[in-house]
Image: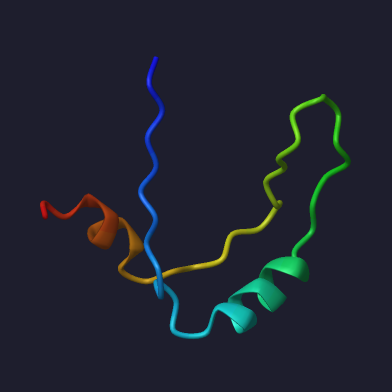
Length: 56
């Protein structure tokens, strides 16, 4: 199956602050070989769902 990527540059006004907030979240211990983990909390990004769902 072909893989494609969409790169959105300059998406966040202050990416460093968002990264800092994400690093302060709690992440459970990794229990599998999958390299990604979801935090126990969520960061609210107002308008994200509407933005990525918009027809362009």
